[in-house]
Image (cartoon, rainbow, N blue to C red):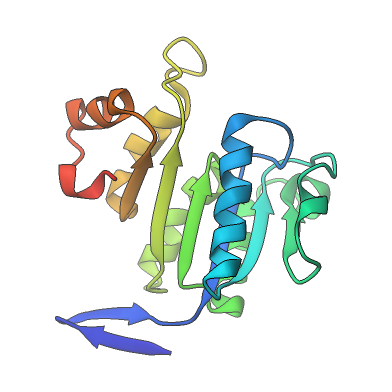
Amino acid sequence: PLIRENNIVRNTSKKALVCLHWLDLGGAEVFAVECIQHLKKIGYEVIVVCAHKSRDFYSSKFSEDIKIYQIDSFIPQGKEVEFIYNLCKQEDISLIHNHHNIYLYESLPLLRLNNLNIFIIDSLHIIEKKRFHEGFPRISLVWTNYIDIHHVISTKLKNYLLDYGVESSKIK
């Protein structure tokens, strides 16, 4: 269902897509798992998409009603964006919370172009200056026009985004 507020159409479904690099060990993953559990607690149906296959350590902590897709296990290379778009459309996703999933970033223009009215949060955990050309913080900057909220865990990350022109109102 859609509602209109201040000439902005919002999707009011209670379905969330949480995207991760993987569900394996790591600090970002611990936070993502906590976010998934919180979304369930406040009434969202949650679907999880991982870019890469993971061990069952974290997925075993979820209730059976959470669908988990590990893209590199069953989606042909080059079809990842199409998969995420179709999943969002078919499941009527209203909220996306991204934790370092490159395929989600690449899907953002298609999601916005087709006006699916999804609120998009991107969480950043560390500044990766020497790794991957500044890593996910730089990638998040590339896609900032498609992201509603940049969630950061430190003043250092906030300042990093501000230094590159991200509006302060988009940083939480």
